[in-house]
Length: 224
Image (cartoon, rainbow, N blue to C red; front, side, top):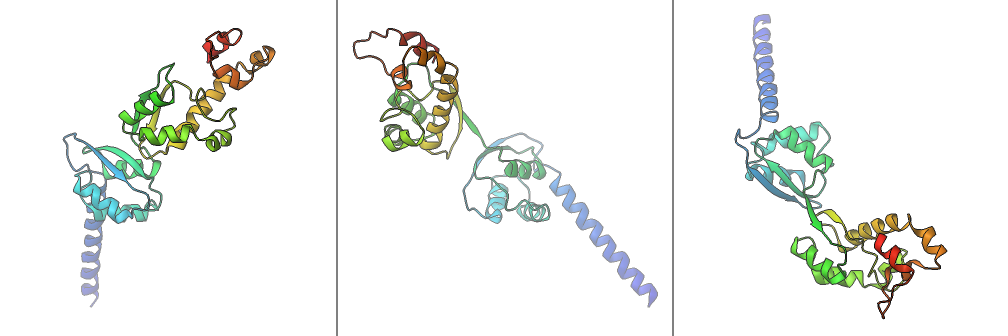
């Protein structure tokens, strides 16, 4: 009886060892030694099971079940950030899971040159596939949005700071606009006292005169 129990214990121990070995080898080994880039979009509300199956189908992980089990063990299945990700097939499942949890979402760089108006900015963002031009224009011209962002004037014309931005797909027009206005305010704050000394409001600084005679506001507009 004792020998029988010992045999059962040995078999169970061997089985557990094999299972653990399989798990770690699978979880810490990439599906391919060749490097191929894959882009995957994780939608809000997507279950981890669907995420894992999508990654397996795209060849990013070898086994969806192993990834799902690891995510549950690590408490990561509910911490995945939605967005568009760029993976490579030489990443281990652990690295893939780490990227999902930390939200290493693919970013798109877009340059909005100095002198661009709202329509030109909208066209550049649309060309980058980040937002529909008509949606961006409508939001940038919305008086309520302008008021909520604390700027002077009925629209955001002049308050969208020209710069090179990195946006992720899925951001709303409001979120992009908010970042651009925040950048404007940060830069403007450096010259706000100077503007007050010249008797110029924020609105006057950013709005060109109809007759094109800038006067005292020209140096400030140049700095912005």
